[in-house]
Amino acid sequence: MSLFGALNTAVSGLSAQSNAFGNISDNVANSQTVGYKGVDTSFIDYLTTSTATDNQPGAVTTRPDYTNEVQGTITQSTDPLALAIAGQGFFAVSEQNGTTTTGQPVFNTQQYYTRAGDFTMDKNGYLVNSAGEFLQGWAVNPATGIANQSSLQPIQITQTQFNPVPTSQVDLSANLPATPAAGTPVSSQVDVYDSLGNVHTLTLNWSQISTNDWAVTVTSPDNTPSTTIGSAEVQFGSASGNPVSAGTIGAFGTTTGGITGAAYSAGGAATLTLATNFGSGAQSISLNMGNFGQANGVTQFAGTTYSLRNLSQNGVPPGSFTGITTTSAGDIVANYNNGQSETVAQVPVITFANADALQRQNGQAFTATNQSGAAIAQSESTNGAGNLVTGSVESSNVDIATEFSKLIVAQQAYGANAKMVTTADQLLQTTINMKQ
Image 1 (cartoon, rainbow, N blue to C red):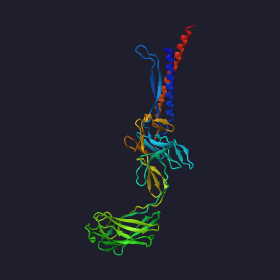
Image 2 (image 1 turned 45 degrees about the vertical axis):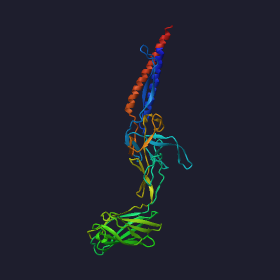
Image 3 (image 1 turned 90 degrees about the vertical axis):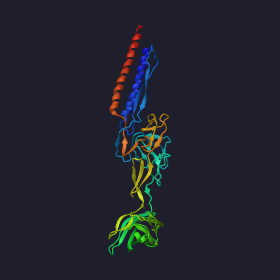
Image 4 (image 1 turned 120 degrees about the vertical axis):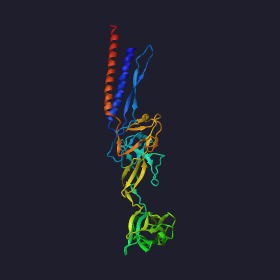
């Protein structure tokens, strides 16, 4: 019985070393595969009889030992959209299983996870890695900038045009000279935008009425029904009758046309409201001159010339899509040629209680199992989730030198088991020949 047992044990050894060789071969073949996680081999002894007085040959079998939680080397990529995870976690991805009549992908309902972050943008605006998996993320409300963390969906860039934003506020910071040179105008210009994104020039002309008392007239050649929008009296220091320090705005006096001034309140906004119409409908623009009694906007201090410090507005012209960028916070940002950008999605990091128990799938992907635990989507660097590294990819976690060392051991062990088979065969043959 021991001879046959030894023969069967040796055969199981050959099978076990074959399995180990297969795992080594898979690892070596994928040593350059982005996001690949290697598979080690664990050997398990199975007994037949083992007591204090009798031990019969048993068998050996193997099981794969997954290394899903072992970090691969993070290297810089020429792909600006590439992402890598430093630490624990996975990207959530979808796989395509069809196409609509309009050429849009139809996605498998199965949820997949991967560390392969070599993403590029396809013709439909989706972020896809080299294995054909579509990156998922949280949609971001463009109005609030807040991500909807209740659901994941494939990230698609659909807005190829940035809509114009009409100007609603102009900020002015300047110093009017306390003793202006005779005959010297004081003037500033700023371009503003209407609701259609057309640009119009506002001109602010200043003239001194008396000491500490100025008038500003606002004009635009495109304003209707008159190019003069209106004027306002701006009173500084004691001329206002309000308790403010010298050289700061204390009140707005007489206003004309489409201009109204804010009432004085200590530290309140010193704002003029302009009622304009550039041909696309009424448009209200606030001219912010700082705060009453504070030197943070328009002032009147010593000098003979007008000194402009800042003149800006918040309108935006229309813009065309130029590309997307990613941030280390996981934001997917669409960029436009008008200098504007918009966060359209956020990439979460998916963690598991036991990531080594995930089920391997094609294309360096994984699916959850009962043993892995449920997927937990969270922002990067949160509750154990890894950091996102932009413009980089994670290489395979396979070490070639280690795999070749395992290969030598597997080869020798296979040869030793083969020798056991031939030796057991010789002993059995000798036993059979005893009859002759």
